Length: 428
Image (tube, rainbow, N blue to C red; front, side, top):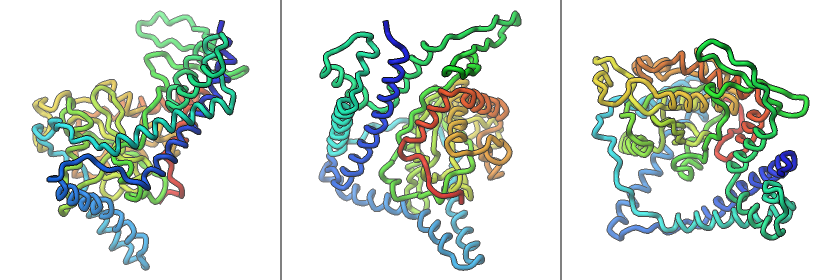
């Protein structure tokens, strides 16, 4: 028989150790960055690699130099002039809604980076060793607690350390399972009305109760975030002056069955004055409800001119504009469904609710959470068929459910400990 209270206590300790392990891996990553790996490439590609490196350097500095010029302007007039130049540059980098379908076929994978693979292996081994040592020093016997029987010390420390070395997400999943088993739900009699929702009273902790939402209302799920694409390139680029206070939602204007890799490739292939784009949206939601991070959340992206420095951009993969007068619209359905899928809307609503909780952005759908076209009337994005009211209700529902749940609140606080997330300083 498993002692659920003891198991929950042990898992809480394991969660703390897993967060320490993640920090150790992050430190190791930064340390290894001082010793660049040696990519596996063909000798004939050396010139192309050098040219690409120069392009990358330019793309990392173009907007940043102009942001610095705005900050360093001495007078109000100089500041207005430099700010106007920045907005003009951002207009040139705003998402393109005229995307032919033939541009979104997945390309063959490039040659692997042998140095990167070795570095990844070293980091994984560092995490596992750190996890085992942390379990031994802290005396955490996780598997004995979960199995309800004692294991040999070295076996338990080894298994516990390997589990901790995998990061905090697996521990979060086990804590959720234990919490659900510890709760004693008292289900109200269902309404006789067809399709009526059933509320469940759940004991979160002794003396603390909350109303858990019905299953079809959704609940907290672990949201993946690792910094997204080109984490290292953005380390010293696109620095955000302060935390974001605006969320802008888009559509990619691409076929819904295209992949996240397609979205990244199409954006990376764009150039402004010969300089390749380094990033775009902060998050892309694919048709299956998959959540994909593109730009680091502690950096500004390229998604809405004049507002990039203080905003986060989320884009739903698909084309939801059906007006034939709009170039490359989805009037004939060639881009797939003209409305986001239910899975997309739920996943996107979770991200917006999470951003609101992490960064303190108010749930104001007139000023703080807005469609792209509200900030740039020349754009149709996110399309005439995007269900803005439905999307707002989903965001508000998730936010309210999480606020009423001590468990969800704790998970949000744990989420804030992830790297590449928080920005120091006030809003610009």
